[in-house]
Image 1 (tube, rainbow, N blue to C red):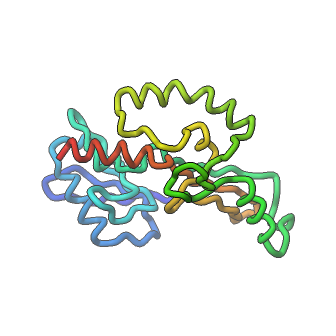
Image 2 (cartoon, one colour):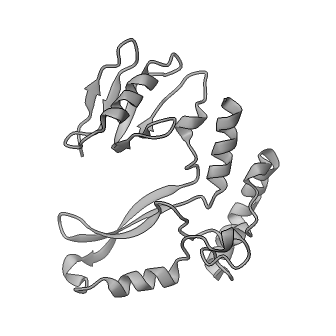
Length: 207
């Protein structure tokens, strides 16, 4: 794991960045130093290895605050998630071409958005599999509670058709190899527009 590097922000909190060996844009560092001078920052500002310049706040940063909430620092990625899982496969178990693996993933996981997200959207389940239906039973009451407080997150698409789908933008499923030859699957999934609508509303409210 990379060790963190400490940066000074004149008149502000310390910046601890886990970027040893990782190039960081000067614009991103300027953003980090700027936010570190906010009086509500508690402790230190942290930057992860994926840190890069963002709109409103630096992507890949963690900004602990006391007595304040910064909606732009939360952003519109609310509900997006990343996870990596190690499989039992090794590099030598993979075929010379991963085209078949990619095809199987694309057939199994709805991705993207068509028809403006309306009826017939091929990026959602037309008929959710049983496992997805069971998962939705544990989630539906919580979404109803969120919608009651923040109606703007309501979607035109049946939300039960959204779980276990990939979303649009920079979301992906990736087959990875570790240095020791182990095969991993990495996933970056989206909030299917709900996070964007919620984040946008509260950023505007803060303004």
